[in-house]
Amino acid sequence: MAAVAGLFSAFLLLLSSLSADSFQYQTLTPHSHTLPHPLQLTNSLDSQIQVSSTLENQNTISLDLHHLDALSLPTNATPEALFRHRLFRDSIRVKTIASLAAVNRTKADFSSSVISGLAQGSGEYFTRIGIGTPPRYAYMVLDTGSDVVWIQCSPCRRCYTQSDPIFDPTKSKSFGGVACGSPLCNRLDSPGCNQRKKCMYQVSYGDGSFTVGEFSTETLTFRKTKVNNIAFGCGHDNEGLFVGAAGLLGLGRGKLSFPNQAGRQFGSKFSYCLVDRSMSAKPSSLVFGNAAVSRVARFTPLLNNPKLDTFYYVGLTGISVGGVRVPGISSSLFQLDNSGNGGVIIDSGTSVTRLTRPAYVALRNAFLSGASHLKRGPNFSLFDACFDLSGKTEVKVPTVVMHFTGADVSLPASNYLIPVDSNGSFCLAFAGTTSGLSIIGNIQQQGFRVVYDLAGSRVGFAPKGCA
Ligand SMILES: *[C@@H]1O[C@H](CO)[C@@H](O)[C@H](O)[C@H]1NC(C)=O
Ligand SMILES: *[C@@H]1O[C@H](CO)[C@@H](O)[C@H](O)[C@H]1NC(C)=O
Ligand SMILES: *[C@@H]1O[C@H](CO)[C@@H](O)[C@H](O)[C@H]1NC(C)=O
Image (tube, rainbow, N blue to C red; front, side, top):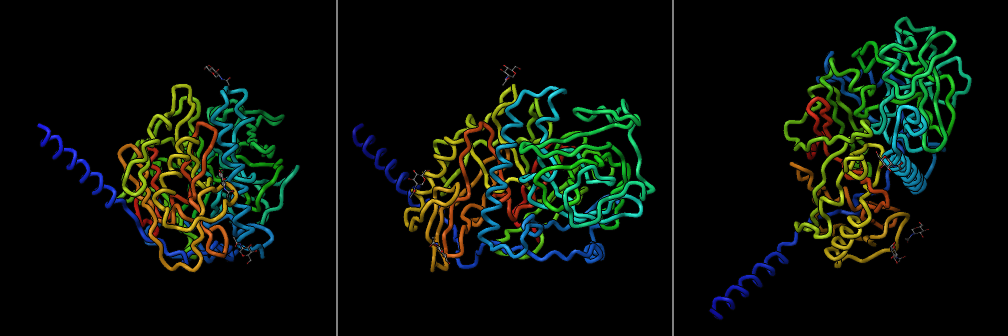
């Protein structure tokens, strides 16, 4: 008996030493990663329209995405300044999303908490589309964290500076009004009515910015594809800390978002692939339609928040570091409860993934112990697991896998160890949040084709999806 027990414990010992030996690493090549520089925008829309796309037809749209850094001023900002500003926008977006999710929302107070538009932190990517007939081309920010589509319209009571002329609805043959009390108007969370009996919308932001105007319908043109009768806000009064885009294309899960409005034409599906800008100058891309669904994507079901239909909630059950489930990270830390608290959303406009604090601390500690062979560096901004990788061409770093319900997503090393300066300082690109809501940010999504299948109520991840 004792011999058997001895054999058994020797076996256990062997197992544990095996698992220690099989701790998984992958290679990061620090010298090939730099802080992203802003790319010059070719302001001519024609360069974009004439790109021939084999995908393009009436039921598919394929677009280039540009990062917000390219619209940032001053245009000669250093990569360090751009990165710090990105982290600043990120903190505002996270705060706004958290306050949105925390508030008990009713029809009456909805407008005060809606996030949308081009306030600081309204989205990290934009594209160029045509508005009206004939189409007037302008830059629009894309936002998976809001629904309402809107643009600045003349006459302006107040308009912020944008890089294209302001849209004039009187010059468009396809512009249509929406009557007060109509079903379309009533889809707004807080519809209004003006003296001309036209439906009014208003969208406010966490930082006090807002846009107000007539809710209207219009034709949008994406390269050669027209989409008719899209309800959008024609903003005559737009105030706040805005970036220089003309408006916003809401890609949220709510009824008034662009993918839901154009559902008949594009099957309520879209996907994007965000290029790792620390390594590549290729543009990111966005596809609407059935072609958006990658065959190699792994899918996880979307969850419903009874209080909020805009965000894309997913089930996160755990995270592995080095091939081992981090013991302190259980699905209970990510639970979305019946009153809409907690949960995990996936968002394109947040950069750094935020995890509820206990989950973050457990992840960080597991990562640091797996990366004890690397030289630590000082904390940087919100990051407290940083490394001095200066002079290194190659380092081994622990693998990180996010376990979603039904989909394990194995992150490339550059999706969690990112350069924070030009001297070889890299940080673990996760952070903790005291809010119960966790957010999967765009750094962790880099290189994956992320598929939003609203009709199938699921989100998918396809590795190496930017090709
Ligand atoms: C939100 O509503 C729930 C009931 O639906 C209530 O229990 C909770 O206290 C409310 N929270 C706030 C912050 O008002
Ligand atoms: C980095 O931040 C962590 C937690 O925020 C703190 O405990 C630690 O002392 C900081 N390290 C340095 C070198 O400042
Ligand atoms: C990085 O280099 C810059 C100058 O190029 C210097 O100001 C900064 O202190 C350096 N940072 C670190 C962490 O060494």
